[in-house]
Image (tube, rainbow, N blue to C red; front, side, top):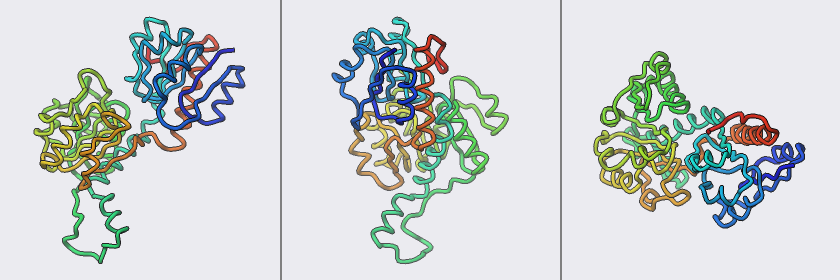
Length: 321
């Protein structure tokens, strides 16, 4: 029997799968992120940890959890985990690749369309009973999407799925910037690999799908926003710190860019107060990228599958390291 701690509420049937394997499972029942001192206290005697991307799992946590054999992250990204420290301690780290690709791509395009066509503003307008009838010069004139140029920063699974929606569904010209060329995307979607600067200057819409690294931290800063078209819209569903929020607010307030669809935040769950004040062509979501019932269930199942595999002495199914 192994001890397992889950830092958040997950589906009860997945907890039962762990218990059916005769493991001792403790699941945190409270909403919101786990406090640091509680996390350090809870890991002291556990063999497996199932955690969220908002949980910082660093060397101190691993030292406190001296029995840890596996850290199963509920998400694709794993920048919240010190993988170097885990490697040194022989702790397996797993994630949930592929589970949320299409769902997150859907949300990306929803934010893009909502910002371009000013859907949230229009909804508030109607609810305030201000709609008096159709006019040629209506208050909420938006931006066309069909046939425009879509720039993808980070052409992985999700970036490619977004590009597919843009090209096949909306006839968009696809530019992308990535560490490696995606020949499949170039062939299927007529996508073109370009420098970051060219992507900034040529794109009407920019969708951010790059992982958070030292190189991508504040990739979108004042310099980047100055290079973008003044009618461009940025959508970020990757990681908040990829975008310098001070610079983003400045760019929106000064008209350097036209709009934004944001699902992740630099100091999450805190949202920059400047963003909260901006409503025209600015859409804010509470980290909804993978938020469908089916996808979240699949993520929980993958995490549990990996824990069961490692605790039974088998190889992890989705190892990060």
